[in-house]
Image (cartoon, rainbow, N blue to C red; front, side, top):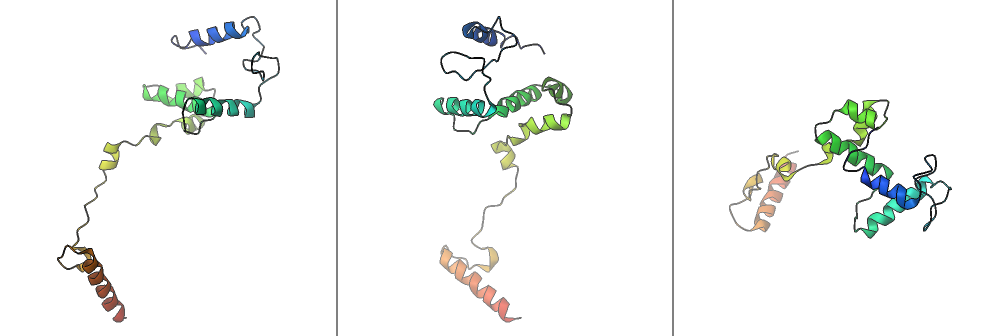
Length: 152
């Protein structure tokens, strides 16, 4: 798969800085903290590294290895990409799998919430007396409910 032109410089700089350019079959991330080794980085260590670096950057959101995949797929779809192409880029056999990474439905704006028609409460609802005192309103409602219960 081709690399985005704005991203191309980052992996190249990383490969050069880590001395990995001449080792195309070697691991991209090793277990060493100062120098990369041939030992493959286990998935749990990759997850821990992401969490540490997110915390160091002040990011409190719980991130994992697949957070980046979800971010890429969502950004692609937001910018007019198709689900079929997103599935191909993610190497998914089914678009149903790709849909699991689509986070567009998670975004709810204030405008979306304001579409819900909610009328402000009235102190005169439920048979409350016309008084600014909430206690009298509750008392009035309680008396009404008691009288209704006595009918049964």
